[in-house]
Amino acid sequence: AKRPTRGPPPDSAAGSPGVKVPKSRSLPWPCWWRSTAHAAWRSVDSSSVSTSGDGSAGIIAYADSNAVAVDSASVSTSGDASIGIGAYSPGGTVFVNSGGVATSGVGSIGIRAISFTADVSVQSGSVTTSGLVSRGIDARAYGAGNVAIVSGDVATAGDRSAGIYGRSRNDVNIMSSGTVATAGAFSDGIRAD
Image (tube, rainbow, N blue to C red; front, side, top):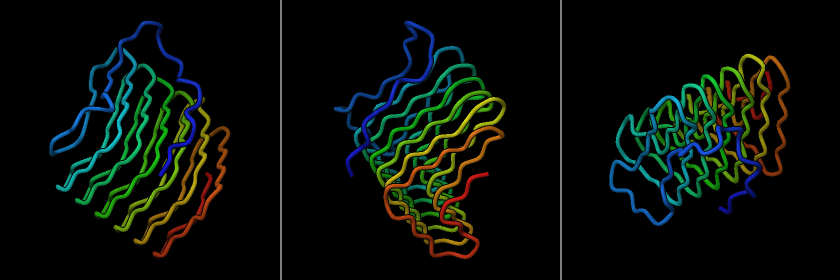
């Protein structure tokens, strides 16, 4: 699936090196990238990532006190507890731009983006999950942050697997231009809290 046009970069310290995964890099199994340094902002730029073991995320990006940005063309995971894309920042903006994500394990959310103090933005082409408790898109902004989700097609098959979920004490804006389909019990199509 073609990625949506990337929006403006998240606010970040000028000159921060971040972390880049070049598009030409071939990632061996387990194909995941995790950034755990605390001060600088984090950036992941990836073409294709796939994992097959339990507990094997596709992409995880984390920064304690600054912004996180993930730009991904394709991610697939097949193990249990294997999130497709996870982007987290207790202290900064979180931005995810994804072309396609597919997960098949139990507890394997397609895209999860969380900030505890700032805005969260997710732009997604397509997301498919087939396991139990595996939301398609899960975006949350706590504190003063807002949530914005722009999505194409989303399909989930398992119970307790909402298609699109956005949560914030402030604004939640979900724009879906494709089809959202859920097949499991207790699985809302689109939910804004």
